[in-house]
Structure formats: structure tokens, C-alpha cells
Length: 227
Image 1 (cartoon, rainbow, N blue to C red):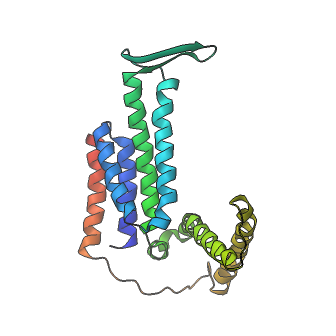
Image 2 (cartoon, rainbow, N blue to C red):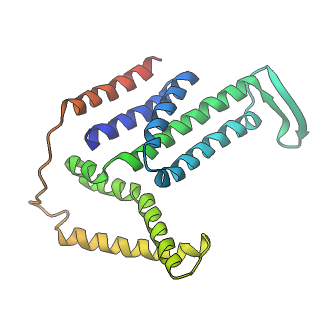
Image 3 (cartoon, helix red, strand yellow):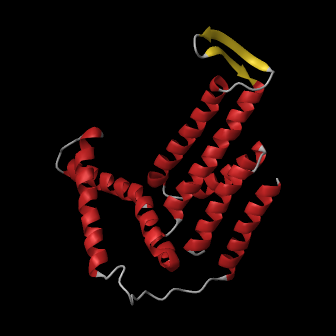
């Protein structure tokens, strides 16, 4: 599957998760995206999955205590000045689960985009919005590149018998990121980026699967509107 149809399908799933009004529908979208993200290498997928699932879980836990809806209490706690009575209502818990699943779906869609999409091919496919896609691709690839730099740094330090804590690794990682930014800028300038009459590598045509994926993406959004 080409990068552009795959990205369109991920965007459609994220939009669908924000449009549907049934918890079960959002849960199905989360399971599909989680299965796709799970196919990425374990050492790369865990920061995305842990961050997304912890954020979604926090929404589920906090919502019943900050929202005031419903009339079926499951637990009533103490009364705190300014905050009022802490309680857990069945409707609040259901809404917290719904909103947490929404956040998880959007986070998992981004995780799959960062882990499974070839950003270079996506950039070459969007020639009509080249400047915007360059910014998006560079921002998206920041986290994977930092992961690779941190892994290489730990291996190099281990070979020299040196051990640094997580906070002590920030300085060399920051310096490496700045140096990489300069190298990318020099490479883009040397290749004539932004000048008229640019050339590009030939791209393969879209397959039947790519066209079917675009149709599926549109169907997902339309179906979400009606659900």
C-alpha cells in the first residue's frame, strides 16, 4: 500500500473516532489501530503505546471527578471546598470511558502514522503541498530519530564503560538534534529545494489496493457521520 492512501485511511479513522457517538464504535476503531501499531518493532512502539494509553486512562479516571452529569451515583465521597462533593456517577464514568477511547484512537492513529508510514514516499506524493508536507514529515520523524540517537548513545557509552542517567543524556541528544537540523538544511539547499524547475524521482502508479483504500477512507468518514 502506498503512503498517501495509508495516511488518508489513518486520518479517516481518527476523524471517525471524533464523529461517532457510540462507545462500542470508538472501541472497535481503537482495536484496529492498536493491532496496526502492534506490528511495529517492540523497541519503537512502546513509547507511543504507553504515552497514548496512559493519557487515555487518565481521562477515564479524572472525568468522573470533574464532570457533573447524571443521576445514578456509584460512589459518594467527601465534600471539598471549591471542588464540592467528590462522587462517581454512572453517566460520568461512561462519558469518561468514551472520551478516553476517543483520545486513544487519535493517539494510536498518530502512532501508526509515525511507526508504519514511509514519510519520504508520502512527501514525494504530495508535490502540490510540498512545503507543508516537509514540515509535517520533519516533525513526525523527530521522535523516531531521537529514539535511534538515544539507543546509539547508550551503546557507545556502554562500550566505554560509562553510564549516564536519562536526564544526563538530554544534553548530547539536544546537540545531536541541532547538528542534524543544520545538516538537513544544508542538504536541502545543495539539492536546490524550493527552486523552479526541480526534478523528482519517478513514482510508481497507484494500485487497485491504493484506490480501494481511498474509497474505504471516505466510507469510514461517511459511516461515522451516520452512526
